[in-house]
Length: 250
Image 1 (cartoon, helix red, strand yellow):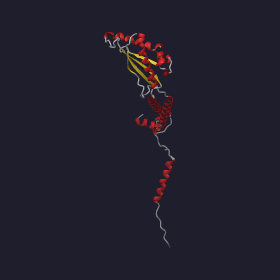
Image 2 (spheres, one colour):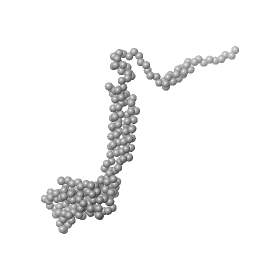
Image 3 (cartoon, one colour):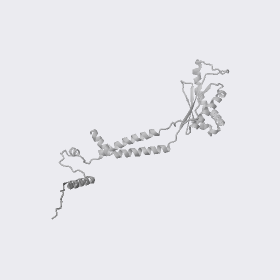
Image 4 (cartoon, helix red, strand yellow):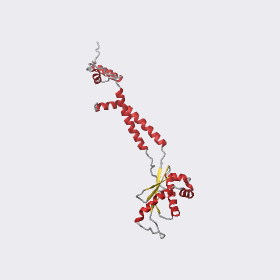
């Protein structure tokens, strides 16, 4: 089958492709936008330092870096305990969250090759997520010296309370684009399927392939508009061929 034949098949049933694409894309867009609930992410970063002396000057000892990183796992366990979260609930009643809810909502991310610990919170309100993660970070920094008897945590950055970051689950455009592409392929495949299932004879080539004999004559389909145009053309020709006559008085 040549490229022209493929183009003919697609053009003949172009309305099927357009209908599939329009219905699928519009339906996907409607349900996606109507059910979409944005989720925002806010995070803070804490660094675990080496031991700080009473004078407040950091005692830099690169040999203790490996030991310092061992604190990461310990702190990750401590921060997800009621000992910390209940203090957050006590100091920040405006959050209206229980200790168990805070434990479930705060994610602690650590890396064995780094001294940085990340606290992350997801919420449908960015301002609320930022408030929660900042509150947990500050309370944790305050409680660690009492629990571990060492003050070696510094807050690198807090989540800003202002701004309008994009939601982390914003996949609406991607979903609509996928729907468009899939429906387009489905429409094209449907056109070729219908053409394959259509076993009627339409062209001289079809007759030659099926019966193996040449075509002597063919009946052309005539539209009403063609007949009307043909009749009007004949009337114009008749008027053009009429002679002009003049009456002679006696």
